[in-house]
Amino acid sequence: MSSRRLLLVHAHPDDETIGTGITMAKYANQGAKVTLVTCTSGEEGEVLVPELEHLASNKEDKLGPHRQIELSNAMKELKISDHRFLGGPGKFRDSGMIGTPPNERKDSFWQADLQVASDELVKIIRETKPQVAITYDDFGGYGHPDHIKAHRITHYAIDLAKIESYKPELGKPWEVLKIYWTAIPKSQMQKGIEALANSGGSKFFGVDSADELPFVLDDKYVTTQIDGREFVMQKLAALKCHETQVQDTGPFFQMAQILGPEALGVEHFRLVKGLNLIYKNIIELDLFSGINDQ
Image 1 (cartoon, one colour):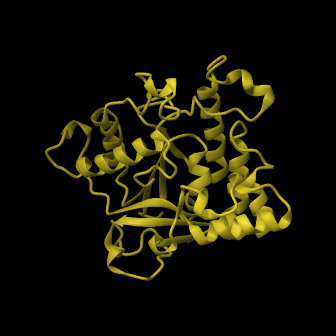
Image 2 (cartoon, rainbow, N blue to C red):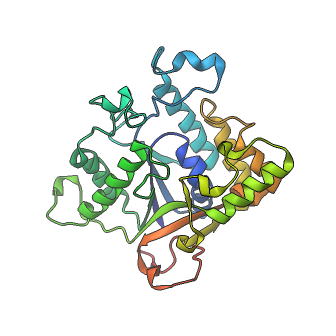
Image 3 (cartoon, rainbow, N blue to C red):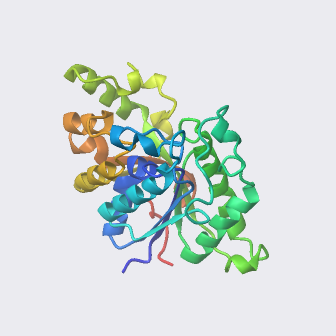
């Protein structure tokens, strides 16, 4: 059994599979302890399945519990046994976008007290003792308030968790050695956009250039590449579990069909804290490189 322990903090069900499904499956397969923390149940998400539209927040408002089941099924596909909702299922509600009524709700994740939300994660960090953590950049990838809040609580909780005098009732102090932000290299996205266009397929999110997308990263800032092409079928199966959010005719599946395993089977990250920051111009191939087993 590996002594490697990986923590991932995501905003909504499906975010984990889209951005880090390969990474999760690969490290779980290697025997690492993989812990996924999802901050909300995605109550405000769109419903792409007509027969399930009644679950939407503006109708029966039962999408959250349904997406919890979707996530549970997706984790079975990725072979992840340790998944938690921050504070428990339904503790923090999907915030929707800035300027919308859901964002103003007192129970939304965006409105949650930073200290309260971070303490929930401190407990998990001190319990699971991860050497490596993954979350979003400070813009949350594309500006969604829940992604931004997930970024903030992850960094704050990691800082607090290592302080011996900070709330000992939350567990013994623990220091996370490396922090990564999810990343999509601009060159990789441009390749996919062009491949879709040349195949006669639909435009990726309606754009002609990767420069138009807020969530791509200049290649020079990408530090780490995780190649798990052998786990693509698991990732696709997990994506299908998120039936209300991901269509099997959508751009992710189209890219996989056109470009093959590389389109979904290689995930990228930006190392923002850790030992390997000293290595410049070298693409890291293992999240745990430089860490002695502990």
